[in-house]
Image 1 (cartoon, rainbow, N blue to C red):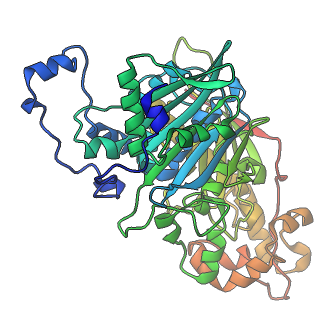
Image 2 (image 1 turned 30 degrees about the horizontal axis):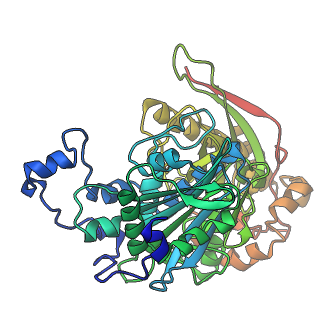
Image 3 (image 1 turned 45 degrees about the horizontal axis):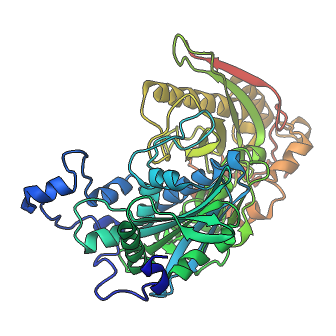
Length: 540
């Protein structure tokens, strides 16, 4: 047994164990030591002529691809989802406490296949990937490094795998703090391996015993765990196989507060700066908007993960702070839904691609004017509520769409798509779909008709002046929209000019206009809610 195992290196070693700057966007600003000062003999010993050196600064630079912290969290959730094929049934996201400094830590845990010693080294190296397939979400082999370093300065991985008759346990440390504080000019990732023999955990040494002991000392000095016993204790809840990622030294904002807020909601993780952002100009309008998923996803991890995957994975759960995240399919909540078919020309020698685009009005329409397309790739949300029409456009108000675009490639952070000609053509087609849908259906939620035929009927009904000649609307449609009976509509009727552009007939939208005889003006509903009609749009 190694001496280090018996002794177990106590608490923190002397000297600073944290960065001077805890703000992510400033943590990359430091003077790097010059490699030129090192002697020729040192370069030979470290093998500089056989491999490229990667400076620790690259860890931070690489992580800046994630502008949004939730994008980094989604990357780690994707890794767990990709383990479904290896038996994963859950991924847990929770808070823990670093016993060395009492600071919060972010913990991810799944019960997937885990990683063997070779796999954990591939995971923690730069640019290695074995995941390129038709079903897996990850493809660049870079997600673990970028996401963990975006959320905190340091991360430690515990993984247990079964390969045939061999059961292995591995611990790996990726510590930006360690690399900075020890002035390393190369990325060093200490890894410990163990195996199960006769129901006992024994060290698995691939190099020299000295290297193994050195890795143990670094991990105990720079991780939240002070002894070998504490390290091995982390495998207790992993059970037979799976992976646990603990991210610590979490980044702070410019006010010196943690970027991730664990305190305001015991069942959620909030983005502190985003939560402060409010929309709307009146108190009532803010209340309505702030409850909608299109707003909450920006700062509530529970809201974001509820729509992160288009179709719910069978026998798989996302458990956030001890509570299962309820899956939401945005398309299921649309009113007067229509299905369009888009057939892009991908390549001359490729198979014909057919994309289903579900379009409808938000269930809160017309009270709430949110709009946008939700674009998924391989079941993963890439662009939520993407505004393909200009923000100030009257057309497309309250129109929401959902589609899965597997024929275009997402950007590295999976929060956007590569701006290729295919993407630009998709944007153009989606704009056409929204305009067409709005033109033929806007009257169903109380707006003046845009379709010439319906507009003629509307004018005739408006000029008749009698209740017997009103522009009729199906009673079921009126009930679904709720413009006459909705308490919300009544509450904000006086604020309609703030919610909708002046070009809209605001009073008619909220059912407040009456004709000379005192009867309410109603609008026709030509289409049925959730209709089955579809239109095909094929690229020329």
